[in-house]
Length: 281
Image 1 (spheres, rainbow, N blue to C red):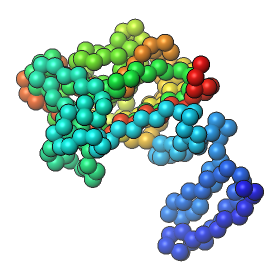
Image 2 (image 1 turned 45 degrees about the vertical axis):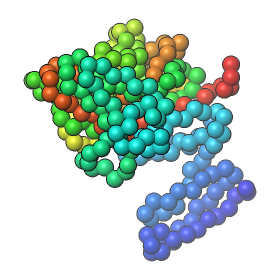
Image 3 (image 1 turned 180 degrees about the vertical axis):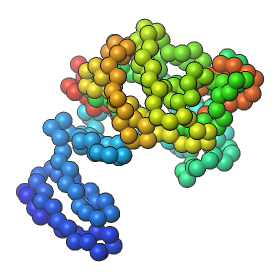
């Protein structure tokens, strides 16, 4: 449409505002004002600033691959992850199931519960399809909660993101968030051919608290920016897997010591790739 002047009231009618728009713009509103967001040349919305992670959503669905799993469709309480058309990799008393108990701070239904007890046990949920980085911007985010933190007796390793592992072992290749006995903080990791750059970020992990752990890989997979609860951290540029490497979108929880039960809860996993070229090569 041609340029237009939109006006409205914010804050329950207390504030009048207006904004000039041009063809293809979108309008958003916070508590006090309308905002104009120009559609970028690649077809998605630019990053927002501050604590909001990003608006970017592609308008043409043929130019992107999007996966959003919230563990609601396809499974009843106690159902296996395979009910959601994901691959379940479990071993040595590891259990994956839709949560049947109250989880701290949850408003929404749909929680995947990863339970491990015996040393070397694991409970991993991964996509059946393998993915590659490069060839377009990739955004990932998972919302997770750790029920009981690692201590001197019991410990487990979390790896959430794009992973090569399907067991309790650490990734040989991947772009992912890790929590293990080596650090009290989440570590953002890029791993190529078993060589890892791991950066501890944020504050110490708190039990029974929800965290949104995300990252954005640039178009040609030369830089990765991690996010914690929507706030960008320093980008990593070393040990990023080769663009030919096959990776699973997955949440991995593996026991590394002790016999007590440790739990990881996953509210959702989100993956969005915007192709930089044609969908078919």
